[in-house]
Image (cartoon, rainbow, N blue to C red):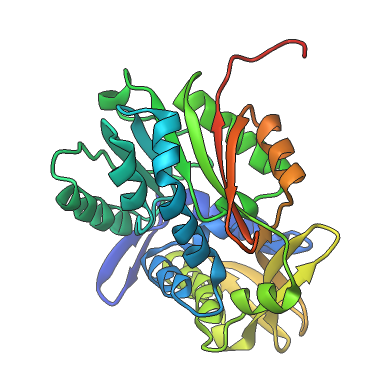
Length: 325
């Protein structure tokens, strides 16, 4: 039976997967909690604030790129597909694609239910003739698509370089799962961030206004609220570092002093300087991006980048699998 937590008179049910990931992650060495748990309602709101920050180049770069190539994407994909967006969030970029692609339906998938329903309503109003079928789900686990789109060809949409949040093996597993869900002949439009100078990368994940720090620290507040945690959030600081060997930005929560706390009744202790690893953001060169996609069962058929070559949009197809070259 799910443990019921009460705060400010509001009852919420703790997600058993969240509980397991947090408890296992805090017990592990090094400590790490999967980044998908950032996205409760407050976390989703903070992330939308991040996307508008002057230091955060990915959203505005990808949005401008999508505007310039949406027509070509639509021409290559053809009309009448169901657009399936993984990690829809506020769906800020989605109208650009929907306006060009002439889809038969739109299926936004997101782990944050409140945020998902709000954005789905907004898109249904913006495209009154388009069937919208929101799915509240963690797309790192099996996602059953709605029966209403079962007979339609699919165009997956995975913007924001979210694939970069995953280690290579997890990214390949997800891409293979997406291929299975969308079906042979499906297409996938995916955003992938490129390697670039550190004076651009680091501020994008450690902004002057402290919004990314608040986003990272909100994970501790969520643990306290939903899992009965006693973590002193003021004892932790946001850290963003570049791991050159892995070609990724890492986000950590660093203990500023020795600290002891409980989560779901289990005791934990951390020494000053110890961290909880909360997110990766891998950056890909052109060859690495294509290799990753092919390993996941997707054949790149077109690729576009911005004038600075900071960000790429890649259109792929789930072609029949071949036993030999």
